[in-house]
Length: 457
Ligand SMILES: C[S@@+](CC[C@H](N)C(=O)[O-])C[C@H]1O[C@@H](n2cnc3c(N)ncnc32)[C@H](O)[C@@H]1O
Image (cartoon, rainbow, N blue to C red):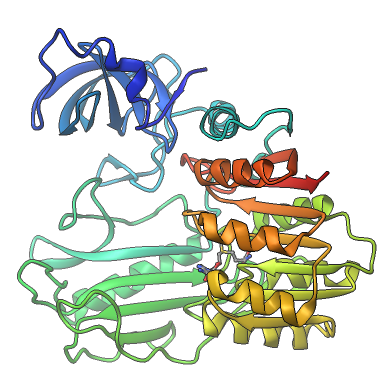
């Protein structure tokens, strides 16, 4: 199975000299032959690689080009002319359009798993140049639908009234309204529809970025899957709005028209969730894995790779509300968490208290600056767990992790294309990549999580 990335220029350079290259705005009819890292379809036009958003292998599509570079172009589907032979009918539709949150729903689930497994292999071997590790079978998701515990919706307007849903693919101002999104639970859908109906009853207006006018910007619905608690966070511009429905746990943020982020105070409302044996509080700004059920599997794999025997010093870097470190604390001697969001660190400390875990401490700092002080305070760890955001680790942070000189590193990654260079740098410095286990946390999308075990020789 061939996997391409937007860095595949070399592969097509030889053929680009003779023919005029397609231009931005041009429409082409193309046949999709594979999927790229990140999930877009890959086609060839006059020797160019074209990355096509919204297309799947075997599809014949009309594509409008948004970008045209020397060796490749990027575009999105304008019309599906003939679906690929393996396509299955889309199930999650909004206004008769495929859900933008489920771009791979046309692929049978087994095929999604095969593609994700191949993407991890390709990233590590081709982009990272790392070899000799055991790539284990992908852990399938428990639920293929209705698995998300959090969704963010945008307000738009349709026929003169507010609508609430997702941005149309590639559009910042068009919102596709939703009645039932199959990525969300029934409770999440109910909460969103209730807020939408309230906005309609109150004749509120959606915020218009271009005109810098209107009241309602977006709505985050978060859910404790194990506690049944539903929390909604409504983001508004700095205008007065009537009181939102009281039976929803609603926090109103005044964000000020035209600013880039919320400036108003958040309420002190916490989400309550249970992950494995842990009772957790989660502040509105703190990270929680979006698929609660699969987070338990992910942490189980991290625990297996960490192979703790009860006495080890464990660093949990990028610890969020402390979930991984706290889940492993009974098998470790001591746990030290590091996290940059202060509210998440407060949650981690509270979560240790409420779960009667006495051997875990947490520090609030950027990993770039916080690892050395942590090392001085705690001493060298036996095991380091890292779980960074999609951007992965900078080279400098990898160097700081190398200074920890831990015999074992467990890397929890939500992006194999950033895991790959990080793993390569660690291997270059003397670690061996032993095992990689992909996990499907996000069915119907191209996202793949994996857990990697690196050991020092
Ligand atoms: C993928 S989440 C993992 C959180 C936690 N391990 C979990 O499973 O819930 C990444 C975490 O890293 C934190 N983070 C992002 N950038 C950071 C940085 N430069 N230094 C420290 N923490 C950071 C985020 O706030 C977030 O909590």
